[in-house]
Length: 478
Image (tube, rainbow, N blue to C red):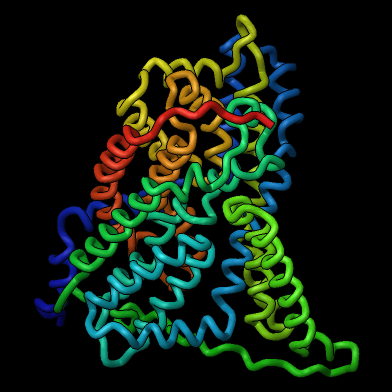
C-alpha cells in the first residue's frame, strides 16, 4: 500500500518545477542531437544566402573554404574541457572535494554551498566546474548525517555553466577576441583584437558576475525541497561509490617512467618558469588573455596533480569523449560563419550585412542590449555552444555595434551573460555532468528552469543599465 506521504513529493512539486520537468521530458523525447541543429543551421544559412542573391557556387565555395578556418580554436575549446576534467579528477582535488563536502551543516546550506563553489570554479574553467560540481554533489550526497535532495544538488552543481561561466577566464567569446590567430579574417576586420581589460576584467563585468552568483545561490537555497519532498540519492537508487581504481604497477622496465613522478615535476617546473617570465616581461592583461598560455598551465597542472604520467593519461582517456561535440560541430559553425560573411548577393551584400542592418536599426542605448540578450538566449537553444554561436553572431552583431557606437567589449559581455541562459533549459551541456551524477535532465530542469526565469530579467537590467557607463572605442585592426 502507498501511503499519503509517498504522494507528498509529487504534490510539493506542482507549478513551475513540474512544468519545467515536463518540458525537459519533451525535449529528451523530441530534440535531436545538437549536431543536427548545427547541420540544419548551415543549410538554413545557405538558403538565406541564395535568397539574398548569392549563387549556389558562391555559397558552396564559402562553405568549403571556411570549414577548416577555426581548426586552432576548435582544438583550444576541446582542450578547455579536457584540462578541466583532468584537473577535477586528480587525487589532490578529490581530497579537497571530500573535505569541502563536510563543511555544510544543513540541506539548504549544502545546496547553496554547491551552487556557490560551482559558480566560483566556473570563473576559472567551465569544464573544471562541470566535473568539480558533480563530484562535490556526490560527496555531499554520501553523507549519512545529512538528508539532501539529490536533484537540487545536481542542479546546483550545474549552475556554474548555467550562470556565470562566460564571464570568467574560459569565456569562448572573450578568449577569441583576445587571440588574433583564432579570429576569422572577416571578423578581425570588424572588431580588431582586444584583451580581457575590455571584457571580463571591466568593473561592470565583475559586478555583473557577483550579482548573478548571489542570485544563483539564493534561488538554489530557497527552491530546495524540504521535509517529505526531499528525494535523496539513496531513494533514487543512485550508486555513489567513487572509490578510485587502485594504482597499477609497472610490469616491465619500459613502463617504469609512466609510474614515476619525476617527469611531471620537471615539466611542471618548466611551465612555472615560463609563466613567471611571461608575467615579468609582458603586461599582466596580455598574459592573462592568452588562451594558449591558459591551456598550457591547466594541462601541466593536471599532469602534476595526478602525480604520474600513467594516472594523467588515464584521466585524459576518460575526458576525451566529452570533447566529441566540440570537435565535430565547430567546423560546421566555421562554415556557417563563412557563408554569412563571404557569400555575396545583391549589390555585393551578404546575409551578415542584412542582419546587421536590422540590429543597427535598433539604434544605440538600451534597446540594442535588450534585443541582443533575448536574441542570444533564443539562438542558444538551437546552437548550444558559446564559442560556436559567437562565430555565427559576431559578424553582424559587432558590425551593428560599430555602426551605432556601442562599446565592443561590453557587447561581448552582453553576449556572454545571455549565452549562459539557455544552458539552464537545454540539456546539451548537462549531459556530461548528468552521466556523472546518474541523473536525467528532467530530474534537474525543474530547478534550473526556475533559475532561467529569474535570471533573465536581472541580466536584461544589468546589460541595459551598465551599458550606459561605457563609451565607444574604435576597433584597433592589426
